[in-house]
Image 1 (cartoon, each protein chain N blue to C red):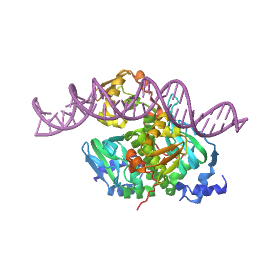
Image 2 (spheres, rainbow over the protein chains, first blue to last red):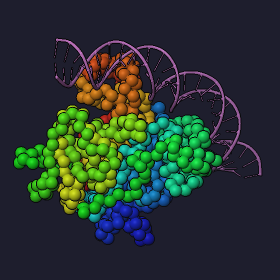
Image 3 (tube, rainbow over the protein chains, first blue to last red):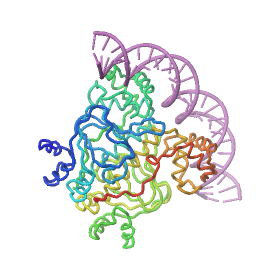
Image 4 (cartoon, helix red, strand yellow):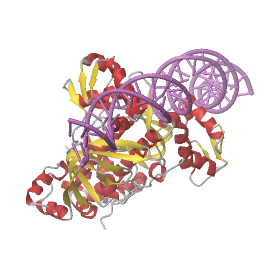
Length: 237
Length: 237
DNA sequence: CAGAATAATTGATAATTATCAATTAATGAG
DNA sequence: CTCATTAATTGATAATTATCAATTATTCTG
């Protein structure tokens, strides 16, 4: 890894407060990789050798059933770590990972990472915050899956993706989105059609919120489901 | 809190290695409570004042939508902490909690807990392991929800609940189970009926696996979805 | 123990979602 | 730029799941 890359690592929230020594120790056994779109990073069931941190690009975490059907569990954007839980505990991955676009990913050996985490509160504290944030993302998704229909789920997803803006471009395939939302691609297509009656215009991957009030009234977003919390922190007041 | 209760706390995995001093500091602002069945412990949206540890009984974590529909996100049995993520980060609860049976619960002030966690690797390490375990439980559930039909989900749930045994009694209401599995109570009832053709006999809350091979063949349990991992540990080899 | 309240089941129907097939649109390799 | 490939859409139909209503079990209370 180049010296310049250390600056990149330093900018990752979980490593912000680690000492120089710790950091170089961590990075020693690691590497910074670029992957083209569609690269399989690892498969569920494998042993976790590396903690991964997505620095640029996008990654999907997914799982397969015996018939080969895929379900996307989560979609990640920079900067975010993934498979933290497996890397910490040494348990096998529960999900596979694949790049959705060309991506830059930091790999850190789990051994060095675990040693550092056990020794250094300046690392363990943000690691706990990151675990907590990831946990809460999944809680939100389970609520989303159990309390809403597919069309509502899509509406809320679009609203969250757009934020303040009235127009967004989907940063990945619609079938990926479909799987993330727990539906088939055909169903997603129809869900988009359904939302045309509720204030959303769709032109390929370009989504235009034409009537936010109607879209909100129909989809009924809720802060305890849809808000995407930024990085959380653990502050002992 | 009585001196005897300290022994109870000591037996909680996340507190196993904490020093006496830390432990008494933690417990000082805490309390050990008994709650009757059906007690609402807190509501989603509220600020997290206490970390909770279920010592005896059972607790459901659930959420409501605007119409009052409830969705059970998870069901907990002893010994397990809950709302660790909210307690650590000070973020509002994403779920409400209610006792399913008479329960004994340890309450620890989040302030003292956060201070202790930031200072003591003997506490932070098992806390990370606990967060990791909880995270992975939810990953499994999302896979379950996205890859299986309701009937399969029920079959796998029964198989996991029974373990080696060929007979189990449901430790909570069927409507609670229905909601945990992401279906209505009516649907669960029909799902149980459907499983009668696949080796399961149902007599009230008593579930009898009459033909495990058939139940397995139909439900298709998978270790990366259904296995309930015991407590994980973080070991820096 | 009786009656009331709650939980579970069953039936009939509607809504939602999936599947299969076919077509159209978009993307990428040469 | 064109063809081949992949992605997305649409139609027709089936499977799954939800809803509403009614009935039967079960549990709780006095």
